[in-house]
Image 1: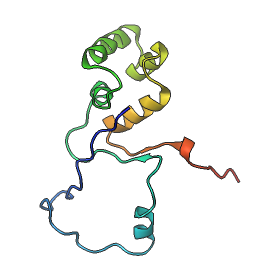
Image 2: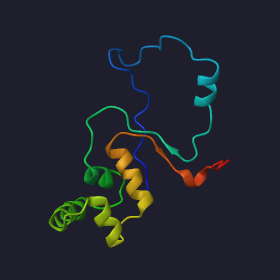
Image 3: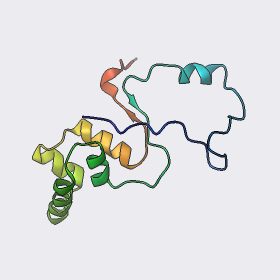
Amino acid sequence: MSAIPDPGPTAPPGRPEGSPPDRQETGPVAEVKALPTKGLTPARRGGPRRSLADALVALELVSGDYATRAVAIARERGMSLERFLIAEGSITAEQAARALAEAYQLDHLDLATFAIDMA
Protein backbone atom coordinates (compact mmCIF):
# COMPACT_ATOMS: atom_id res chain seq x y z
CA MET A 1 0.00 0.00 0.00
CA SER A 2 1.44 3.37 -0.87
CA ALA A 3 0.48 6.58 0.84
CA ILE A 4 -0.48 9.75 -0.95
CA PRO A 5 2.53 12.04 -1.23
CA ASP A 6 2.59 14.81 1.34
CA PRO A 7 1.98 18.10 -0.49
CA GLY A 8 4.21 19.82 2.05
CA PRO A 9 3.32 22.62 4.42
CA THR A 10 0.35 24.72 3.53
CA ALA A 11 -0.47 28.15 4.82
CA PRO A 12 -3.55 28.60 7.01
CA PRO A 13 -6.52 30.40 5.41
CA GLY A 14 -5.82 34.08 4.97
CA ARG A 15 -2.05 33.68 5.04
CA PRO A 16 -0.11 33.70 1.75
CA GLU A 17 1.73 30.53 0.84
CA GLY A 18 5.32 30.63 2.06
CA SER A 19 4.77 33.36 4.66
CA PRO A 20 6.45 32.80 8.04
CA PRO A 21 4.36 31.69 11.03
CA ASP A 22 3.15 34.32 13.45
CA ARG A 23 5.26 32.93 16.30
CA GLN A 24 7.57 30.07 17.11
CA GLU A 25 5.90 27.37 19.18
CA THR A 26 7.66 26.34 22.37
CA GLY A 27 6.96 24.23 25.42
CA PRO A 28 4.56 21.28 25.39
CA VAL A 29 3.15 22.07 21.93
CA ALA A 30 6.60 21.96 20.36
CA GLU A 31 7.42 18.77 22.28
CA VAL A 32 4.30 17.02 21.00
CA LYS A 33 4.95 18.13 17.43
CA ALA A 34 8.51 16.80 17.68
CA LEU A 35 7.37 13.27 18.63
CA PRO A 36 7.89 10.53 16.04
CA THR A 37 4.78 9.88 13.99
CA LYS A 38 4.98 6.11 13.62
CA GLY A 39 1.39 4.92 13.52
CA LEU A 40 0.06 8.36 12.61
CA THR A 41 -0.90 9.18 9.04
CA PRO A 42 -1.42 12.94 8.85
CA ALA A 43 -4.49 14.18 7.02
CA ARG A 44 -4.26 15.60 3.54
CA ARG A 45 -4.63 19.34 3.92
CA GLY A 46 -6.48 21.61 1.53
CA GLY A 47 -8.63 20.86 -1.45
CA PRO A 48 -12.12 19.47 -1.55
CA ARG A 49 -13.23 16.45 0.41
CA ARG A 50 -12.90 13.19 -1.55
CA SER A 51 -15.47 10.47 -1.86
CA LEU A 52 -14.53 7.19 -0.22
CA ALA A 53 -14.21 5.60 -3.68
CA ASP A 54 -11.79 8.35 -4.76
CA ALA A 55 -9.78 7.92 -1.55
CA LEU A 56 -9.54 4.15 -2.11
CA VAL A 57 -8.26 4.74 -5.64
CA ALA A 58 -5.82 7.45 -4.50
CA LEU A 59 -4.42 5.08 -1.87
CA GLU A 60 -4.11 2.44 -4.62
CA LEU A 61 -6.27 -0.02 -2.71
CA VAL A 62 -8.63 -0.60 -5.65
CA SER A 63 -8.72 0.44 -9.29
CA GLY A 64 -11.00 3.19 -10.54
CA ASP A 65 -13.17 0.75 -12.52
CA TYR A 66 -13.49 -1.60 -9.57
CA ALA A 67 -14.43 1.28 -7.26
CA THR A 68 -17.16 2.42 -9.66
CA ARG A 69 -18.61 -1.11 -9.90
CA ALA A 70 -18.35 -1.61 -6.13
CA VAL A 71 -20.24 1.64 -5.44
CA ALA A 72 -23.10 0.46 -7.68
CA ILE A 73 -23.24 -3.04 -6.17
CA ALA A 74 -23.03 -1.75 -2.58
CA ARG A 75 -25.86 0.69 -3.32
CA GLU A 76 -27.99 -2.13 -4.82
CA ARG A 77 -27.42 -4.25 -1.72
CA GLY A 78 -28.10 -1.38 0.67
CA MET A 79 -24.58 -1.55 2.10
CA SER A 80 -21.95 1.07 2.69
CA LEU A 81 -19.03 0.89 0.28
CA GLU A 82 -16.50 0.04 2.98
CA ARG A 83 -18.66 -2.77 4.42
CA PHE A 84 -19.18 -4.23 0.95
CA LEU A 85 -15.44 -4.15 0.13
CA ILE A 86 -14.51 -5.68 3.48
CA ALA A 87 -17.15 -8.43 3.06
CA GLU A 88 -15.84 -9.17 -0.44
CA GLY A 89 -12.28 -9.37 0.91
CA SER A 90 -11.11 -6.54 -1.35
CA ILE A 91 -9.80 -4.44 1.55
CA THR A 92 -9.17 -4.94 5.26
CA ALA A 93 -10.87 -3.01 8.05
CA GLU A 94 -7.56 -1.17 8.61
CA GLN A 95 -7.44 -0.12 4.96
CA ALA A 96 -11.07 1.04 5.16
CA ALA A 97 -10.21 3.14 8.22
CA ARG A 98 -7.28 4.77 6.40
CA ALA A 99 -9.41 5.47 3.34
CA LEU A 100 -12.22 6.97 5.44
CA ALA A 101 -9.72 9.21 7.22
CA GLU A 102 -8.35 10.28 3.84
CA ALA A 103 -11.84 10.95 2.46
CA TYR A 104 -12.78 13.12 5.46
CA GLN A 105 -9.33 14.76 5.68
CA LEU A 106 -8.70 13.41 9.18
CA ASP A 107 -5.50 12.12 10.74
CA HIS A 108 -5.43 8.32 10.97
CA LEU A 109 -4.06 6.77 14.14
CA ASP A 110 -3.06 3.10 14.02
CA LEU A 111 -3.83 1.93 17.55
CA ALA A 112 -1.98 -1.34 16.96
CA THR A 113 1.31 0.59 17.17
CA PHE A 114 0.60 2.09 20.60
CA ALA A 115 0.54 0.52 24.06
CA ILE A 116 -2.78 1.45 25.66
CA ASP A 117 -2.77 1.96 29.42
CA MET A 118 -6.00 0.38 30.65
CA ALA A 119 -5.42 1.48 34.26
